[in-house]
Amino acid sequence: MDFNMKKLASDAGIFFTRAVQFTEEKFGQAEKTELDAHFENLLARADSTKNWTERILRQTEVLLQPNPSARVEEFLYEKLDRKVPSRVTNGELLAQYMAEAASELGPSTPYGKTLIKVSEAEKRLGAAERDFIHTASLSFLTPLRNFLEGDWKTISKERRLLQNRRLDLDACKARLKKAKAAEAKATTVPDFQETRPRNYILSASASATLDDTSRSPPWAELKEKHPGGWRLPCFFLLPLAPSVTLARGCLSLPEDRKLWNDEVDKAEQELRVAQTEFDRQAEVTRLLLEGISSTHVNHLRCLHEFVKSQTTYYAQCYRHMLDLQKQLGRFPGTFVGTTEPASPPLSSTSPTTTVATMPVVPTGTGLAPPEEAALCLEEVAPPASGTRKARVLYDYEAADSSELALLADELITVYSLPGMDPDWLIGERGNKKGKVPVTYLELLS
Image (cartoon, helix red, strand yellow):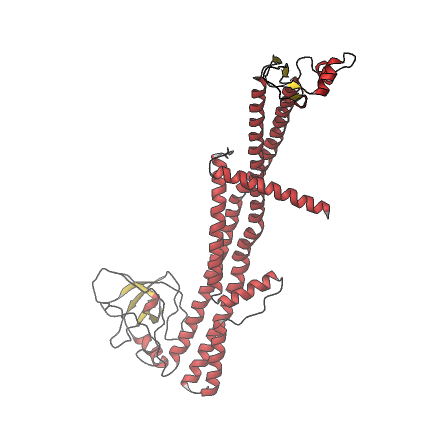
């Protein structure tokens, strides 16, 4: 227990001394060893990397899990090193409610059938969201957390050690400076000089000693030990009348000079040791700070993985909703359309190009039912004027024989027929012909 208390007291003393020294440096009252510009740039880049990594990590967590309570729960499970329980996504919960509503309101009614179809699509969307959250957490969030909880803590620890080594080095420099100043002051004091100060006389015991020639006075031994000069002990002197005087020795001993020389040598040795430790710690910290470049490369790779998983997630969502829209378009009494304006007439000579930004499948209402349309399309001939070229923006799978399947980036010929739904056109590719949605095309002038 004594050892621990002594160590605690020693650590507290060191901490207090360094705190005072650090405060004096802040106020410009003490010298400070400055780091080189390259090292300062490494420190600034490391701090910036840490700050922005924390911000990106927090905002990505908000993106993946908007519910703050759920985020706190996941954090606690992670700190307790326990598996996070599976949680139903919002899409899956919506799908469950829609399925229950369809079951209660009547699954055979148009509304009930639509609810069932939408609930199935929402369930698939929820599953896709779950996969995206899992993939993004492993490929993006985990590396960022590992950096903040692993590499950055190591860097911070070494930086604190470097700060302590620098304070020790500055303290050694100040100690050496004081020792040299004291040594220079000691060398300027003259050697033994006999003076006759007034108002001092030897005490009675000292006088008896001086009168007794058979005895050797104690200051005689001092003179033998210090031939270069000696100092008369002050306790032998008493004030007396001004007319009485006695010689008194005044001296700066050679041992005093030797003492300060030893103090300077000791301070120089401590300075060399402190400088070596500071240089070693600076090199270790420099290597860790230069490793931030490798951290950037690793985070760049993780960022690519995050973008890839997000692209896959949105592609799945688009595909699921496209299938849902196709299914709803075939239901009688279901209204599925687009708020985009209808395509301009094909006979227009405007040089502008019409581009559909969102591939929305229009309703399946054309000139006739699918069976009749299939027959009519074979007999339909393109008009003499009004045909245009169009580039396909997205892949499209034909829902029936009256439609034409499309592949992205291919060129087809399109035209309209009188009375035809404005959201659809007749497309031709070689000897194949069928209806195509306008929103999947880029009409060329």
